[in-house]
Structures are given as C-alpha cells and as structure tokens.
Image (cartoon, rainbow, N blue to C red; front, side, top):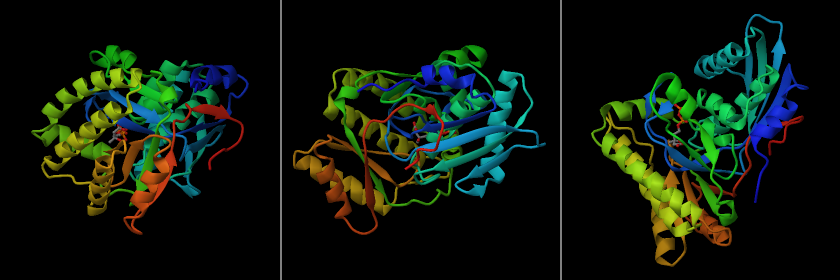
Length: 349
Ligand code: DP6
C-alpha cells in the first residue's frame, strides 16, 4: 500500500491556494514512544520514536488569512480559549515568521475522534494545521520541512505528516543543527497491514497534559534515563522488525516500550498515573489472548485508553474480546492510514 506524501501535494497546491487552505491529517500511535524533550522551545526529543499512522479519527483544519487584528480559532464548533488558543497562535507566529508575513488567520478545526484523551488529537491537529497554514501563507515546504514545522506545534505531529510506519529522528545536537536534523520520514513496511484495536475507556480530556507529564517525568523520575537508554535500543530493534514485517516482534517491543514509559511516570515525583483499573483489565485480556495463541500486543499513551496491535484477520476477535469485558469500553479498529494532505473540503468521518 502506498500513499501520496504530503510533500508533493502540499507543494503542488500551495501557490493556487495561497490565502486559504484546508488540510486533513490522521493521528499516529507510537510503537516506540517519544517521551521527553532535550529542548522545549524547538521540540527536540531525547530519543527517536516510531509510529503507525491510523485511518480513523482525522482532524480537518482550514486556515484563512484575514484583515482582523487577532487570530481566531474554532475547535470542534466552539471558540478556543486559554492554552489551546495560545498554542495555535504561537504556531501561527512561527509560520508567519517563516513566510515573512503579518496577516492574522481564522482557523477552524474539527477532530473526528476524542480530543485530549491520549488518542493523538494533538498529532493529527498540528499536522493538519502545519499543512494548511503553510499553504495559506504561501510557504512551499517539502515533507521533511513540513514535518519539522509540525514538530514545533506538538512533537508527535511531526510523524502524522506521513502515512504508514514512520520514524521520527531525534536529530543531532542543539539549536539549528538539532532543528534541521530532527524530522520524521516513512520507513515502508506497510504491506504488513496490521490492525490497531483502539479500546476507549475514557473519551474526555485528561487531567494532566502529556506535555506537563513528560516534563515532570524527565525532571524527576530516577527511571527516566534507563528507559531512554533502552528506548534507543528498542528503536533499532523495531526498525529491523518492521523491515522484516515481523508482527510478533513489533508487538513485543511496542508493549515493553510503552509499559516502560508508564513506569517512568509512576516513578515521577509526584507520580503520574494514566493507567486505570479499566486499562489493566484490557491488558489482562491481551495477555489471555496471547495465551490462546493470538498475536495481540498493547500500547498505551498519556491516557487510560489501550491500543491493541494484531493482524487484520484477528481484529474482530480482539475487539469482541475487549468489548466483552463490560460496558466501560468501546472499540474502534484502525488500519494503516495516509499522510497529511490538502483538501478542498472536509472529509472527517
Ligand atoms: C505518550 O506530542 O503530545 O503520545 O510535543 O509536548 O506536544 P508535545 O507532546 P505530544 O506527546 C506524545 C506523547 C505520547 C508518545 C508518542 O506519541 O510518541
């Protein structure tokens, strides 16, 4: 399966859509996590990460340049305020600085999936915003530059610029050298065509944002360094496992990497705990499935929701097993999805 890269689409259309652009981007779920920044301003990660872009829960974002004195931001039919508004304004300032323009913008964005619930809405959100804003402000960026730009809105957004399996390089050094070398790129392996059963136990926004949790963990957990060191090894092994399309190995590495990341949070001071009893019940069900010979492995981000990696053929059984645990959980099954792209209309589901 191949998808058109954001690159060619963005550059093809950026000129004729100068002033207004609409983009759609999908969330990605990391199989080797990004957890910790070495530079908070440039969003340079401590370690590289690897993800799978999904084909569900897209974000559709339009950016229109306006004459008004301030940016306006509408998120899921309501005016954005506070931190959400500030993050978008700051991001647009960056785009304006790159484009050498001062126009304010009207941004309208809608998430088809839950917002701020550890389901990667900031990844799809900033990938869509970067793609639409670059086009609206007349920037002609290739995929690597677009990925570096999206990174400045939310680190994980750098990966949603591309479809399929994607690696985000930590990059070398600090300052400009770090900025130039820290970008995402697709790594192939899409023929594997796995499924990711997303088990939603909590669709509301989380109490502690991943950004805050990440900072608190890197600064205070004695487990952070060991996890980061082992994550570098996990990434190297994961790349090989993706290249040979070895789903059990991919799952095993993904699960241990995610549980290790949660161990760093649990040992932060004060501790941060996203896992709920419902998350643990799903982890138990995944273990039971494996005991029955099903290739099923779990990963969990900054929230209690669990994503289970399995084959496309096993996905209905995995979903039914999880739903059978009780009414506290619903599932959506995702497969490999495409990179961010410009579109003339909304195509959120
Ligand atoms: C647990 O990309 O949301 O999902 O860069 O501060 O915006 P900021 O953080 P964000 O963190 C994602 C953390 C994660 C793991 C991952 O996606 O790799």
